[in-house]
Length: 457
Image 1: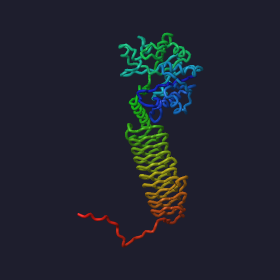
Image 2: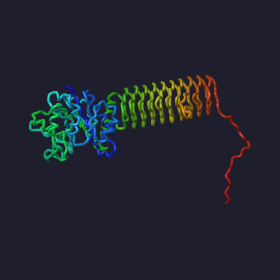
Image 3: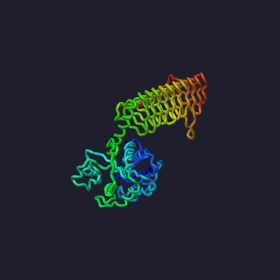
Image 4: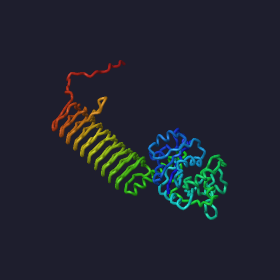
């Protein structure tokens, strides 16, 4: 069976109160449309056709990496009209699955089950039962439980509005028959639009049995119409991710206060405290610990390492048994060796810190290569930028850099060297020697401090 997907993403989303198209609003750091596309891709269809409309140029530019066919719906005349725009580009396929760009939590397993139903019938529909079905199209069945039609809420009688089984809009159909049904639907309804739901009644008229299945959880088919619903789905999605982590042996201080906006791969017995934000791809080794209020982006943290509170890591690689923070910032290109230490209010950029080395207080290290067992005193900076180009600082194994030192790159400090506190180092410092570069201290015995004139009473 050659499968095609019509992914509808043309709606404006007026209730979002935004200049951005609805499908570009983000859930877990990614556009809604990206979530729906990922679910569709899990089925390995021959083709995914995205129907765009409002803000189309912006949607296409923001989602240019998607392997899909783009089709414009110039006028938004309903879901049936939207699917018709896609059918031309899916004309060589056997089955067409209809999905929605503002329904981000649909599970691949649910879609696979729906597609399997289509092997035995020309039309299969995903439905769900809701405690409050207000606003949804109702599934009308006969006494034998066979689907007869779908009636939209605004067109439903009081008896029909009491039905709790509703249409999700997600269906799969034989491509040729769907094309025929779409050509026969009209606009005799409250919205004067072409309803995709009318396809169900036409299929029944043609003697086609409509198969149905339901998602495991109703939030899978929840759409986003406003920012409140988007926030609700965000928490549901984050809770799902948190539960998966805990099942894998990860300890969370509070599952409700973790935000994963990318992919987190964490080994057993790692621990994550509250208000941690994960972006991009982050890996935690066994027993790693993340303190509260940290941001981790595209970083690898080795087994047994600890990231203390309020630290920001971007593009960093942390060895085994290292400790970072609190209030540390590791910028892209940072590499920390095993058992290294980076302390409070330290910023490191594009630098390698060797095993056992320490940068514990109030320092900036940029474009540096630091060996093992080096001690960097408080207030040390590597002066890596001359206004036009970046330059590198090299510090050998076992060196000791005194507090409040400035290392003016390009410069090299040899193994075992000591830099006296308060030095400005502009030339290479030899190994195993003390290097000082500071003005001579002078004391003036007869000096008098200036005083303000006294005020007369």
